[in-house]
Amino acid sequence: MATATVSAPATTRYMQGLAVPASSVRPAEFFARTRRHITLERQATYSGQPQETFELRKSDVLSSILVRFVGSLVITPGTGSVNTTARWPYDLIKAARFTANGASNLVNCSGLKLKIRDLMKHGDLSDRGVSQTFAGTARTQGTLAAASEAWGVGSASTGVAGGTYPIELEWVVPVAEDEVDLAGAIFLATSSSDLTLTLDLESMSNLFGLVGNGTAALTGAIQVISTKFSIPIGQDGQIVVPDLSIFHSLIQSRTTAIQNGENEVRIIGQGAGKSLLRCYYQVFNGAGVAAVPLAMNATNYGKQMWRYSNNETPDEFIDGGHMAIDEERRYNSQIGALWGVGCHDFAHENAFRDVVDMGTTSDLRLVSNIQSGVSLASPAMEYVTETVFAAGQA
Image 1 (tube, rainbow, N blue to C red):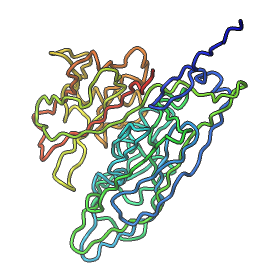
Image 2 (cartoon, rainbow, N blue to C red):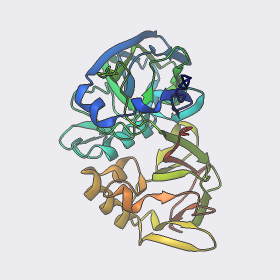
Image 3 (cartoon, rainbow, N blue to C red):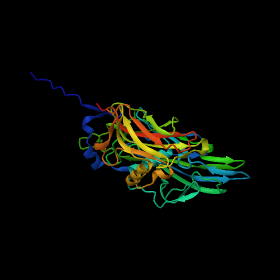
Image 4 (tube, rainbow, N blue to C red):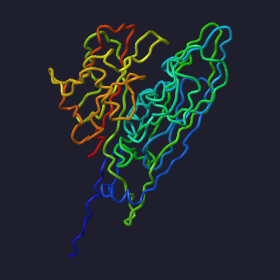
């Protein structure tokens, strides 16, 4: 009697909440066959609206999103004056919020924090020699600006002259943690895929200080440009994909519980399965439009540390000057001088060795000492945690 043969069911692997045949996960073949696609996904006209939402096309594997603003700024002092705040120009994006395949807010941070992260991650980027004006002084280091960008008018500057100024700004939303191995990239080639980028746009009153009948009008176009990689078909007729078993996340938080002396800020979003790549922060000092980043130097800051458990303190920078030197050596930019950035970076040199397991480092805290001689007015710390975590891998 003939014996019936029953085929074993195909093994399915879940990546980022989507079912993919396990036999299709072949990173070496994917990288040999894939092709990069840089595409304008969407464009919107900006004329002062508070928000724009962009849904990206369902195709390929998404690596990163470039947001460009191209437009013009019209300054009219009238019989008053126009000043810019320290939020100008990069915090025109008050918050970039990126959601993919049911994972909400994988990225949720301001435009300035995106610029800082981009320079931290890519050692070949440099703002040295790019002249921009900050607080009325032309600067050629530490502005975060690219030579191709145009601020139009300086940041944290008073008495801006009337005129029409061309504006060109750019921000990178880092979907993948690494654009080479595509760790954290998003698989989009199914009908159930969902990808949304929402841009909350800052009000003009927080970008500009207007006195009397002075006005500032900003108009232009917002362009959303994706970098994707095609999904090839193998010789067996199946799709071929890399290992997309993790999500990459960049989340900004804010606390106003800041004072002179030691400040311990408990990091939000801790949990098992998460790995902390870097945590960077700024202290904005001053009320409302007068708020400016507190420069990272020894005059303003004492010891800068991170801590977990009862009192475990693995890294201790002796003062703000020590941290500023460490950052300049890592990133080839004086990010602490103008923008007051502090950073504990665990991924820059050797992520495999230095990354922090948020499941075993319980009660993780950011510790920042502000010198007693610093005059504080409505201070607030804004910090960003960059993590990777498992994305529904079976």
